[in-house]
Image (cartoon, rainbow, N blue to C red; front, side, top):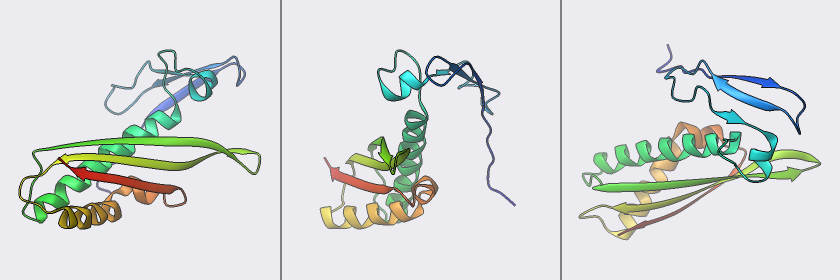
Length: 146
């Protein structure tokens, strides 16, 4: 039995270069009405989203949760975690490919040493389901405590 299942639908109209996609029927409703275009994906966002931005949101939020859990299990809960994900679309063998997700973690964690923090970050990286989804991509984590 699954832990959770969420759905979002995209309706695309027009060609790739001139067309527009619109997200809808998302499980929470918060993505409904968001537009996505090839230009927002490869040029300037212009108020529209992209698959890479949505993947970055998924990765940063997932990693935040995994790190929060692992810090709590370590007996050193965080006062604050800020996780930024940068997902990169590159051309690989002539095909657009998501190649990397670079995580940048800035944390306020009282009572933890740098070495213990880095160990817990490593544990969180192995726990985050989105990190495991991106297993074929290069995932980097730049983590530091304040």
